[in-house]
Length: 461
Image 1 (cartoon, rainbow, N blue to C red):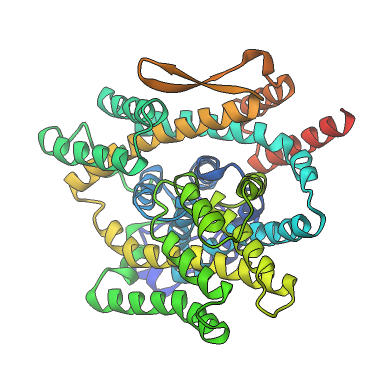
Image 2: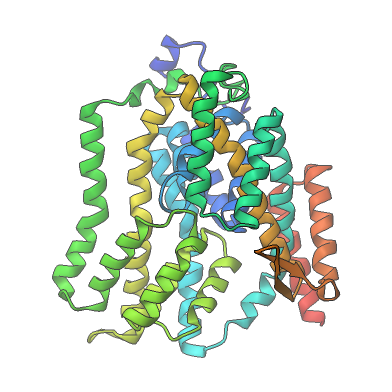
Protein backbone atom coordinates (compact mmCIF):
# COMPACT_ATOMS: atom_id res chain seq x y z
CA UNK A 1 0.00 0.00 0.00
CA UNK A 2 1.20 3.51 -0.79
CA UNK A 3 2.56 5.07 2.39
CA UNK A 4 1.34 8.54 1.38
CA UNK A 5 -2.28 9.11 2.40
CA UNK A 6 -4.58 11.70 0.94
CA UNK A 7 -7.43 13.26 2.88
CA UNK A 8 -10.53 11.11 3.41
CA UNK A 9 -13.57 12.03 1.35
CA UNK A 10 -17.25 11.31 1.88
CA UNK A 11 -17.16 8.72 -0.90
CA UNK A 12 -14.35 6.85 0.86
CA UNK A 13 -16.31 6.92 4.10
CA UNK A 14 -19.17 5.16 2.33
CA UNK A 15 -16.73 2.56 0.95
CA UNK A 16 -14.30 1.75 3.77
CA UNK A 17 -12.98 -1.27 1.95
CA UNK A 18 -11.43 0.89 -0.79
CA UNK A 19 -7.63 1.20 -0.64
CA UNK A 20 -5.97 4.55 0.05
CA UNK A 21 -6.12 6.81 -2.98
CA UNK A 22 -3.08 8.38 -4.63
CA UNK A 23 -3.21 12.15 -4.27
CA UNK A 24 -3.12 14.20 -7.45
CA UNK A 25 0.01 15.95 -6.17
CA UNK A 26 1.87 12.65 -5.77
CA UNK A 27 0.69 11.46 -9.17
CA UNK A 28 1.66 14.77 -10.80
CA UNK A 29 5.13 14.48 -9.33
CA UNK A 30 5.53 10.99 -10.78
CA UNK A 31 4.19 11.85 -14.26
CA UNK A 32 6.54 14.84 -14.41
CA UNK A 33 9.54 12.65 -13.60
CA UNK A 34 8.40 10.01 -16.07
CA UNK A 35 8.28 12.56 -18.88
CA UNK A 36 12.02 13.14 -18.51
CA UNK A 37 13.13 9.49 -18.25
CA UNK A 38 10.78 7.55 -20.56
CA UNK A 39 13.43 6.57 -23.10
CA UNK A 40 13.45 3.43 -25.20
CA UNK A 41 10.27 3.56 -27.25
CA UNK A 42 7.13 1.62 -26.30
CA UNK A 43 8.96 -1.41 -24.92
CA UNK A 44 11.13 0.64 -22.59
CA UNK A 45 8.27 2.93 -21.56
CA UNK A 46 5.85 0.09 -20.81
CA UNK A 47 8.59 -1.66 -18.85
CA UNK A 48 9.43 1.49 -16.92
CA UNK A 49 5.80 2.17 -15.96
CA UNK A 50 5.30 -1.44 -14.90
CA UNK A 51 8.33 -1.27 -12.67
CA UNK A 52 7.33 2.04 -11.11
CA UNK A 53 3.53 1.70 -10.89
CA UNK A 54 3.12 -2.02 -10.17
CA UNK A 55 6.34 -3.20 -8.54
CA UNK A 56 7.62 -0.22 -6.59
CA UNK A 57 4.69 2.07 -5.79
CA UNK A 58 1.88 -0.53 -6.02
CA UNK A 59 -0.52 2.08 -7.31
CA UNK A 60 -2.18 -0.45 -9.64
CA UNK A 61 -2.25 -4.24 -9.58
CA UNK A 62 -0.48 -6.32 -12.19
CA UNK A 63 -3.80 -7.58 -13.54
CA UNK A 64 -5.26 -4.13 -13.92
CA UNK A 65 -2.08 -2.85 -15.56
CA UNK A 66 -2.12 -5.66 -18.12
CA UNK A 67 -5.86 -5.20 -18.66
CA UNK A 68 -5.27 -1.53 -19.51
CA UNK A 69 -2.24 -2.37 -21.67
CA UNK A 70 -4.24 -4.86 -23.72
CA UNK A 71 -6.78 -2.17 -24.61
CA UNK A 72 -4.10 0.39 -25.49
CA UNK A 73 -2.33 -2.14 -27.73
CA UNK A 74 -5.48 -2.35 -29.85
CA UNK A 75 -5.70 1.41 -30.43
CA UNK A 76 -4.07 3.54 -33.12
CA UNK A 77 -1.37 5.81 -31.77
CA UNK A 78 1.43 5.52 -29.20
CA UNK A 79 0.35 2.75 -26.83
CA UNK A 80 2.70 3.76 -24.01
CA UNK A 81 1.33 7.30 -23.82
CA UNK A 82 -2.22 5.95 -23.99
CA UNK A 83 -1.39 3.57 -21.16
CA UNK A 84 -0.17 6.53 -19.10
CA UNK A 85 -3.45 8.35 -19.79
CA UNK A 86 -5.40 5.23 -18.78
CA UNK A 87 -3.48 4.79 -15.51
CA UNK A 88 -3.72 8.51 -14.79
CA UNK A 89 -7.50 8.28 -15.29
CA UNK A 90 -7.70 5.26 -12.97
CA UNK A 91 -5.80 7.12 -10.26
CA UNK A 92 -7.24 10.63 -10.45
CA UNK A 93 -10.05 10.74 -12.98
CA UNK A 94 -10.13 12.88 -16.11
CA UNK A 95 -7.74 15.49 -14.73
CA UNK A 96 -5.27 12.74 -13.83
CA UNK A 97 -5.48 11.29 -17.32
CA UNK A 98 -4.88 14.66 -18.95
CA UNK A 99 -1.90 15.36 -16.69
CA UNK A 100 -0.35 11.95 -17.36
CA UNK A 101 -0.80 12.19 -21.12
CA UNK A 102 0.48 15.75 -21.45
CA UNK A 103 3.49 15.28 -19.18
CA UNK A 104 4.40 12.05 -20.98
CA UNK A 105 5.24 14.03 -24.14
CA UNK A 106 5.87 17.62 -22.95
CA UNK A 107 9.62 17.32 -22.17
CA UNK A 108 10.16 15.50 -25.46
CA UNK A 109 8.24 18.19 -27.32
CA UNK A 110 10.57 20.97 -26.13
CA UNK A 111 13.69 18.86 -26.63
CA UNK A 112 12.81 17.93 -30.22
CA UNK A 113 11.73 21.51 -30.92
CA UNK A 114 15.15 22.75 -29.84
CA UNK A 115 16.95 20.01 -31.77
CA UNK A 116 14.87 20.67 -34.90
CA UNK A 117 15.86 24.33 -34.74
CA UNK A 118 19.50 23.30 -34.26
CA UNK A 119 19.25 21.01 -37.29
CA UNK A 120 17.85 23.65 -39.67
CA UNK A 121 20.18 26.41 -38.48
CA UNK A 122 23.42 24.47 -37.94
CA UNK A 123 22.82 21.27 -39.89
CA UNK A 124 24.54 18.99 -37.37
CA UNK A 125 23.04 17.19 -34.38
CA UNK A 126 25.76 14.58 -34.01
CA UNK A 127 26.43 15.73 -30.45
CA UNK A 128 23.00 14.38 -29.49
CA UNK A 129 24.21 10.87 -30.25
CA UNK A 130 27.18 11.42 -27.91
CA UNK A 131 24.99 12.77 -25.11
CA UNK A 132 22.53 9.87 -25.33
CA UNK A 133 24.94 7.09 -26.27
CA UNK A 134 24.81 5.43 -22.86
CA UNK A 135 21.02 5.49 -22.75
CA UNK A 136 20.85 2.68 -25.28
CA UNK A 137 22.48 0.33 -22.80
CA UNK A 138 20.06 1.43 -20.07
CA UNK A 139 17.07 0.79 -22.33
CA UNK A 140 18.29 -2.72 -23.13
CA UNK A 141 18.52 -3.46 -19.40
CA UNK A 142 15.11 -1.94 -18.64
CA UNK A 143 13.36 -3.86 -21.41
CA UNK A 144 15.13 -7.15 -20.62
CA UNK A 145 14.16 -6.99 -16.97
CA UNK A 146 10.59 -6.08 -17.94
CA UNK A 147 10.25 -9.01 -20.33
CA UNK A 148 11.27 -11.37 -17.53
CA UNK A 149 9.12 -9.69 -14.89
CA UNK A 150 5.97 -9.26 -17.00
CA UNK A 151 6.43 -12.65 -18.63
CA UNK A 152 6.73 -14.43 -15.28
CA UNK A 153 3.36 -13.00 -14.26
CA UNK A 154 1.51 -13.15 -17.57
CA UNK A 155 2.72 -16.52 -18.94
CA UNK A 156 1.25 -18.74 -16.23
CA UNK A 157 0.95 -21.92 -18.32
CA UNK A 158 2.31 -23.60 -21.42
CA UNK A 159 -0.49 -22.38 -23.67
CA UNK A 160 0.16 -18.72 -22.94
CA UNK A 161 3.91 -19.32 -23.23
CA UNK A 162 3.32 -20.89 -26.65
CA UNK A 163 1.31 -17.84 -27.75
CA UNK A 164 4.17 -15.55 -26.66
CA UNK A 165 6.73 -17.65 -28.55
CA UNK A 166 4.50 -17.75 -31.64
CA UNK A 167 4.06 -13.97 -31.52
CA UNK A 168 7.82 -13.44 -31.30
CA UNK A 169 8.54 -15.83 -34.16
CA UNK A 170 5.73 -14.37 -36.24
CA UNK A 171 6.86 -10.76 -36.00
CA UNK A 172 10.64 -11.28 -35.79
CA UNK A 173 11.13 -14.01 -38.40
CA UNK A 174 8.07 -13.88 -40.65
CA UNK A 175 7.34 -10.12 -40.22
CA UNK A 176 3.63 -10.77 -39.74
CA UNK A 177 1.85 -7.40 -39.28
CA UNK A 178 1.36 -6.49 -35.65
CA UNK A 179 -2.46 -6.07 -35.86
CA UNK A 180 -2.82 -9.60 -37.24
CA UNK A 181 -0.81 -11.02 -34.34
CA UNK A 182 -2.99 -9.21 -31.82
CA UNK A 183 -6.23 -10.24 -33.54
CA UNK A 184 -5.08 -13.83 -33.84
CA UNK A 185 -4.10 -14.04 -30.18
CA UNK A 186 -7.37 -12.42 -29.13
CA UNK A 187 -9.38 -14.92 -31.18
CA UNK A 188 -7.51 -17.85 -29.66
CA UNK A 189 -8.09 -16.55 -26.15
CA UNK A 190 -11.78 -15.78 -26.74
CA UNK A 191 -12.53 -19.23 -28.11
CA UNK A 192 -10.17 -21.01 -25.73
CA UNK A 193 -11.75 -19.44 -22.65
CA UNK A 194 -14.97 -21.31 -23.41
CA UNK A 195 -13.29 -24.71 -23.55
CA UNK A 196 -10.71 -24.13 -20.82
CA UNK A 197 -11.49 -21.02 -18.73
CA UNK A 198 -8.64 -21.62 -16.29
CA UNK A 199 -6.03 -21.65 -19.05
CA UNK A 200 -6.87 -18.15 -20.24
CA UNK A 201 -7.78 -16.55 -16.93
CA UNK A 202 -5.98 -13.34 -16.02
CA UNK A 203 -3.60 -14.24 -13.15
CA UNK A 204 -5.29 -11.91 -10.64
CA UNK A 205 -8.54 -11.23 -12.41
CA UNK A 206 -10.56 -12.39 -9.44
CA UNK A 207 -8.12 -11.70 -6.67
CA UNK A 208 -8.90 -8.02 -6.14
CA UNK A 209 -6.29 -5.37 -6.40
CA UNK A 210 -3.88 -6.70 -3.81
CA UNK A 211 -3.52 -3.48 -1.82
CA UNK A 212 -3.06 -1.28 -4.88
CA UNK A 213 -4.41 2.27 -4.81
CA UNK A 214 -7.10 1.61 -7.44
CA UNK A 215 -10.20 -0.28 -6.36
CA UNK A 216 -13.47 -0.97 -8.17
CA UNK A 217 -15.37 1.38 -5.88
CA UNK A 218 -13.28 4.31 -7.08
CA UNK A 219 -14.62 3.84 -10.63
CA UNK A 220 -18.31 4.17 -9.82
CA UNK A 221 -18.22 7.81 -10.98
CA UNK A 222 -17.25 6.74 -14.52
CA UNK A 223 -19.65 3.90 -15.24
CA UNK A 224 -20.33 3.85 -19.00
CA UNK A 225 -23.64 5.32 -20.12
CA UNK A 226 -25.03 6.71 -23.39
CA UNK A 227 -25.04 10.25 -21.95
CA UNK A 228 -21.43 10.06 -20.79
CA UNK A 229 -20.30 8.49 -24.07
CA UNK A 230 -21.94 11.23 -26.14
CA UNK A 231 -20.53 13.95 -23.91
CA UNK A 232 -16.99 12.57 -24.10
CA UNK A 233 -17.23 12.04 -27.87
CA UNK A 234 -18.38 15.61 -28.55
CA UNK A 235 -15.82 17.11 -26.19
CA UNK A 236 -12.97 14.98 -27.51
CA UNK A 237 -13.71 15.75 -31.17
CA UNK A 238 -13.97 19.45 -30.37
CA UNK A 239 -10.65 19.50 -28.51
CA UNK A 240 -9.03 17.62 -31.39
CA UNK A 241 -10.44 19.53 -34.36
CA UNK A 242 -11.42 23.06 -33.29
CA UNK A 243 -7.78 24.30 -32.97
CA UNK A 244 -6.88 22.67 -36.29
CA UNK A 245 -9.91 24.18 -38.03
CA UNK A 246 -8.94 27.56 -36.61
CA UNK A 247 -5.50 27.16 -38.19
CA UNK A 248 -7.14 26.27 -41.52
CA UNK A 249 -9.42 29.33 -41.40
CA UNK A 250 -6.45 31.57 -40.56
CA UNK A 251 -3.98 30.23 -43.13
CA UNK A 252 -6.22 28.95 -45.92
CA UNK A 253 -6.61 25.53 -47.49
CA UNK A 254 -3.34 25.53 -49.45
CA UNK A 255 -1.05 26.53 -46.58
CA UNK A 256 1.41 24.02 -45.19
CA UNK A 257 -0.03 24.31 -41.66
CA UNK A 258 -3.46 23.31 -42.94
CA UNK A 259 -1.98 20.43 -44.91
CA UNK A 260 -0.13 19.25 -41.79
CA UNK A 261 -3.31 19.49 -39.71
CA UNK A 262 -5.18 17.19 -42.07
CA UNK A 263 -2.33 14.80 -42.83
CA UNK A 264 -1.22 14.15 -39.26
CA UNK A 265 -4.82 13.74 -38.12
CA UNK A 266 -5.22 11.08 -40.80
CA UNK A 267 -1.93 9.47 -39.76
CA UNK A 268 -3.13 9.34 -36.15
CA UNK A 269 -5.91 6.99 -37.25
CA UNK A 270 -3.63 4.46 -38.96
CA UNK A 271 -0.68 4.22 -36.57
CA UNK A 272 -1.37 0.66 -35.49
CA UNK A 273 1.74 -1.17 -34.38
CA UNK A 274 3.71 1.87 -33.30
CA UNK A 275 5.89 4.46 -34.98
CA UNK A 276 7.92 2.05 -37.13
CA UNK A 277 4.75 0.66 -38.70
CA UNK A 278 3.65 4.08 -39.96
CA UNK A 279 7.09 5.55 -40.63
CA UNK A 280 7.15 4.53 -44.29
CA UNK A 281 3.72 6.12 -44.81
CA UNK A 282 4.79 9.42 -43.24
CA UNK A 283 8.14 9.41 -45.03
CA UNK A 284 6.56 8.84 -48.43
CA UNK A 285 4.06 11.66 -47.95
CA UNK A 286 6.55 14.11 -46.42
CA UNK A 287 9.20 13.57 -49.12
CA UNK A 288 7.32 12.69 -52.29
CA UNK A 289 3.81 14.10 -51.90
CA UNK A 290 4.36 17.36 -50.01
CA UNK A 291 8.11 17.95 -50.31
CA UNK A 292 8.43 18.87 -46.63
CA UNK A 293 11.65 16.85 -46.22
CA UNK A 294 14.67 16.04 -48.33
CA UNK A 295 15.38 12.32 -48.91
CA UNK A 296 17.13 10.91 -45.85
CA UNK A 297 16.01 13.61 -43.41
CA UNK A 298 13.41 11.27 -41.92
CA UNK A 299 16.29 9.16 -40.62
CA UNK A 300 17.61 12.21 -38.76
CA UNK A 301 14.19 12.85 -37.28
CA UNK A 302 13.82 9.27 -36.14
CA UNK A 303 17.28 9.44 -34.60
CA UNK A 304 16.21 12.48 -32.58
CA UNK A 305 13.02 10.74 -31.45
CA UNK A 306 14.97 7.64 -30.42
CA UNK A 307 17.57 9.70 -28.55
CA UNK A 308 15.11 11.74 -26.50
CA UNK A 309 12.39 10.77 -24.03
CA UNK A 310 8.83 10.31 -25.23
CA UNK A 311 7.13 8.19 -27.92
CA UNK A 312 8.97 7.50 -31.17
CA UNK A 313 6.04 8.98 -33.05
CA UNK A 314 7.38 12.36 -31.85
CA UNK A 315 9.20 12.21 -35.18
CA UNK A 316 6.04 13.86 -36.55
CA UNK A 317 7.04 17.04 -34.68
CA UNK A 318 10.34 17.10 -36.56
CA UNK A 319 8.50 16.65 -39.86
CA UNK A 320 6.00 19.37 -38.96
CA UNK A 321 8.78 21.81 -38.03
CA UNK A 322 10.84 21.23 -41.17
CA UNK A 323 7.81 21.35 -43.47
CA UNK A 324 6.60 24.69 -42.15
CA UNK A 325 10.16 26.07 -41.97
CA UNK A 326 10.74 25.30 -45.64
CA UNK A 327 7.33 26.70 -46.71
CA UNK A 328 6.60 29.49 -44.22
CA UNK A 329 3.92 31.16 -46.34
CA UNK A 330 4.89 34.73 -45.43
CA UNK A 331 5.69 34.00 -41.79
CA UNK A 332 9.14 34.10 -40.26
CA UNK A 333 10.57 30.62 -40.97
CA UNK A 334 11.31 29.88 -37.32
CA UNK A 335 7.84 31.02 -36.25
CA UNK A 336 6.31 28.89 -38.99
CA UNK A 337 8.45 25.94 -37.90
CA UNK A 338 7.32 26.24 -34.29
CA UNK A 339 3.68 26.42 -35.39
CA UNK A 340 4.22 23.39 -37.62
CA UNK A 341 5.66 21.46 -34.68
CA UNK A 342 2.68 22.40 -32.50
CA UNK A 343 0.17 21.46 -35.20
CA UNK A 344 1.82 18.10 -35.90
CA UNK A 345 2.06 17.25 -32.21
CA UNK A 346 -1.53 18.29 -31.48
CA UNK A 347 -2.94 16.32 -34.41
CA UNK A 348 -0.90 13.25 -33.41
CA UNK A 349 -1.66 13.12 -29.68
CA UNK A 350 -5.04 14.80 -29.14
CA UNK A 351 -6.93 11.72 -30.42
CA UNK A 352 -5.22 9.55 -27.78
CA UNK A 353 -7.14 11.25 -24.99
CA UNK A 354 -10.42 10.67 -26.83
CA UNK A 355 -9.76 6.94 -27.29
CA UNK A 356 -8.99 6.46 -23.58
CA UNK A 357 -11.70 8.61 -22.02
CA UNK A 358 -14.25 7.13 -24.42
CA UNK A 359 -13.31 3.47 -24.06
CA UNK A 360 -11.71 3.00 -20.65
CA UNK A 361 -14.97 2.87 -18.65
CA UNK A 362 -16.28 0.13 -20.96
CA UNK A 363 -13.01 -1.81 -20.68
CA UNK A 364 -13.10 -1.57 -16.88
CA UNK A 365 -16.72 -2.77 -16.81
CA UNK A 366 -15.68 -5.90 -18.77
CA UNK A 367 -13.03 -7.07 -16.30
CA UNK A 368 -15.33 -9.83 -15.05
CA UNK A 369 -16.29 -11.13 -18.52
CA UNK A 370 -14.56 -14.52 -18.72
CA UNK A 371 -14.35 -14.85 -22.52
CA UNK A 372 -13.23 -11.29 -23.08
CA UNK A 373 -10.72 -11.70 -20.28
CA UNK A 374 -9.55 -14.83 -22.05
CA UNK A 375 -9.02 -12.82 -25.24
CA UNK A 376 -7.14 -10.13 -23.33
CA UNK A 377 -5.00 -12.71 -21.50
CA UNK A 378 -3.95 -14.20 -24.82
CA UNK A 379 -3.22 -10.72 -26.16
CA UNK A 380 -1.07 -10.09 -23.07
CA UNK A 381 0.92 -13.22 -23.88
CA UNK A 382 1.36 -12.04 -27.47
CA UNK A 383 2.46 -8.62 -26.23
CA UNK A 384 5.23 -10.28 -24.21
CA UNK A 385 6.48 -11.79 -27.46
CA UNK A 386 6.20 -8.46 -29.24
CA UNK A 387 8.13 -6.67 -26.48
CA UNK A 388 10.79 -9.36 -26.71
CA UNK A 389 10.99 -8.68 -30.45
CA UNK A 390 11.46 -4.97 -29.79
CA UNK A 391 14.10 -5.75 -27.17
CA UNK A 392 16.07 -8.01 -29.51
CA UNK A 393 15.76 -5.58 -32.42
CA UNK A 394 16.88 -2.65 -30.28
CA UNK A 395 19.75 -4.65 -28.74
CA UNK A 396 21.05 -5.67 -32.17
CA UNK A 397 20.97 -2.07 -33.40
CA UNK A 398 22.62 -0.76 -30.22
CA UNK A 399 25.31 -3.36 -29.58
CA UNK A 400 26.46 -4.09 -33.14
CA UNK A 401 27.53 -1.58 -35.76
CA UNK A 402 26.91 -4.08 -38.56
CA UNK A 403 23.78 -6.22 -38.80
CA UNK A 404 23.33 -8.02 -42.12
CA UNK A 405 20.06 -9.36 -43.51
CA UNK A 406 20.48 -13.03 -44.42
CA UNK A 407 18.00 -15.23 -46.25
CA UNK A 408 17.42 -18.61 -44.68
CA UNK A 409 14.71 -21.02 -45.73
CA UNK A 410 12.64 -18.35 -47.43
CA UNK A 411 12.80 -15.87 -44.55
CA UNK A 412 15.14 -12.95 -43.91
CA UNK A 413 16.87 -12.74 -40.54
CA UNK A 414 19.06 -10.03 -39.03
CA UNK A 415 22.49 -11.53 -38.35
CA UNK A 416 25.00 -9.36 -36.43
CA UNK A 417 28.67 -9.27 -37.25
CA UNK A 418 30.17 -10.39 -33.93
CA UNK A 419 33.39 -8.52 -34.71
CA UNK A 420 31.46 -5.22 -34.55
CA UNK A 421 30.20 -5.75 -30.99
CA UNK A 422 30.35 -2.57 -28.92
CA UNK A 423 32.03 -4.01 -25.83
CA UNK A 424 31.49 -0.88 -23.73
CA UNK A 425 27.76 -0.72 -24.49
CA UNK A 426 27.38 -4.45 -23.84
CA UNK A 427 29.18 -4.18 -20.50
CA UNK A 428 27.18 -1.14 -19.48
CA UNK A 429 23.92 -2.90 -20.39
CA UNK A 430 24.95 -5.96 -18.35
CA UNK A 431 25.77 -3.83 -15.29
CA UNK A 432 22.48 -1.94 -15.60
CA UNK A 433 20.52 -5.18 -15.94
CA UNK A 434 22.10 -6.77 -12.88
CA UNK A 435 21.48 -3.59 -10.92
CA UNK A 436 17.82 -3.45 -11.92
CA UNK A 437 17.09 -7.15 -11.60
CA UNK A 438 19.24 -8.22 -8.67
CA UNK A 439 19.69 -5.09 -6.59
CA UNK A 440 16.51 -3.20 -7.55
CA UNK A 441 18.29 0.00 -8.51
CA UNK A 442 15.97 2.89 -9.26
CA UNK A 443 15.36 3.34 -12.95
CA UNK A 444 16.05 7.07 -12.87
CA UNK A 445 19.52 6.42 -11.41
CA UNK A 446 20.22 3.75 -14.03
CA UNK A 447 19.18 6.13 -16.82
CA UNK A 448 21.22 9.03 -15.45
CA UNK A 449 24.26 6.87 -14.68
CA UNK A 450 24.23 5.23 -18.11
CA UNK A 451 23.91 8.60 -19.86
CA UNK A 452 26.83 9.99 -17.87
CA UNK A 453 28.97 6.90 -18.51
CA UNK A 454 28.26 7.09 -22.23
CA UNK A 455 29.05 10.79 -22.38
CA UNK A 456 32.37 10.32 -20.58
CA UNK A 457 33.29 7.37 -22.77
CA UNK A 458 32.53 9.23 -26.01
CA UNK A 459 34.36 12.32 -24.81
CA UNK A 460 37.50 10.33 -24.02
CA UNK A 461 37.54 8.54 -27.38
